[in-house]
Amino acid sequence: MPRLRTLLVPAALLATLACQPRSAAPVIYGPWEEGLTLAYEDPSRPQPRRSEDRLQVRVARSVLGPGAPGLVQLDLTTVHGQLSLRVQHSRGGLTLVGDDGRPLSQLLPPGFPTASAWTDRGIEFHVLGRATWEGAALLPATSDPVGVWVEARTPQGLRRRTLYLPDLGEVESREERGGSWVVVNRLVARGFTDLPAFHRP
Image (cartoon, rainbow, N blue to C red):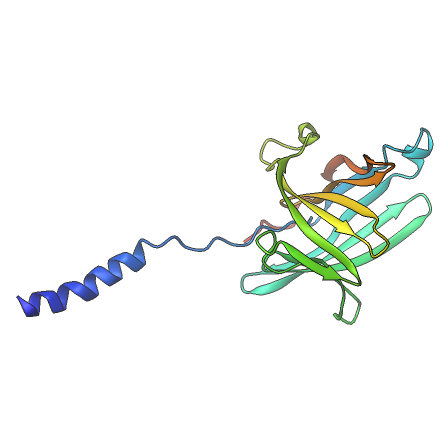
């Protein structure tokens, strides 16, 4: 009997470990598919200025690999010009980096949204909770419409709330103005200007 117990205990431990849930890959709260193009407008502005000031964000290049931070180049375009940004994805976090790879701003912290509070350049951020985006009708049926609201507060007390969706990032932002929340940025179009170069691993 003691010998049987000696054999059964390791077997039971192995079976227990095998039944443990495997950790899923962190959700990417930002655009990463090459060719994905997003368009944003500020609904608080009157027409035609709203359309004239539309911002287009296109994923120009994406390098994602298992076990390594992903680097994504975003091309931002308006009628006034174009700007390229580089963002690095790591363990659910999102960091704006310079051309030399050095971090410039921590947009979302590693472990997001479990990591629910952080500070960057004097601005305090905290997660408010999950919610279904009201504008999700413009997304394909395969997109997850449930995102995470994050509130930012500046040292001057100004507050801004942003909803982040998986694989898209920011889809709506609101600012507190005169005691009410006003939508100042909203995703109004999504598509591909090129075919996706690859599928996420």
